[in-house]
Structure formats: C-alpha cells, structure tokens
Amino acid sequence: MEHMRQSVGLRAYGQREPLVEYKKEATRLFREMEQRLRDQVITMVSAISK
Image 1 (tube, rainbow, N blue to C red):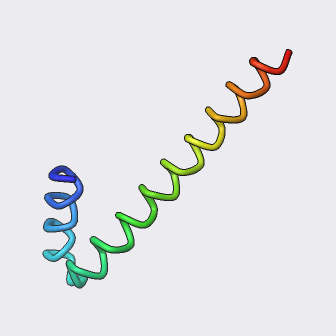
Image 2: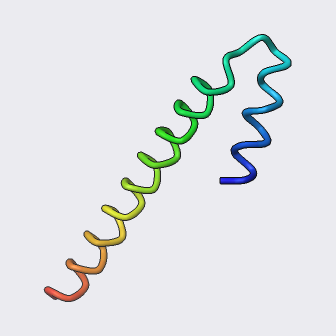
C-alpha cells in the first residue's frame, strides 16, 4: 500500500487527481488479487478431487 501511495503521489505532478488515481490503482490491485485467489482455489480443489 505504501508503494502504491508513493506512485500515486508522483502522478499528481502529471496533473492527475491523486485521490482518483489512488482509488483506480487500489481497485485494479484488488481485482488482480481476487483473480489470483480464484485461480489458486480452483487449482487446489481440482487437485483434491482427483
């Protein structure tokens, strides 16, 4: 989260709204985490059911 906060802060120099950028980045990272979790669960369940 700290790394994300710093990178978003740098975007403010590029005339972007920091709060909007922070929310976008957090949403993107959360969705990536959800997808990785789904993939891992599917892999584990399929390994167990064999």
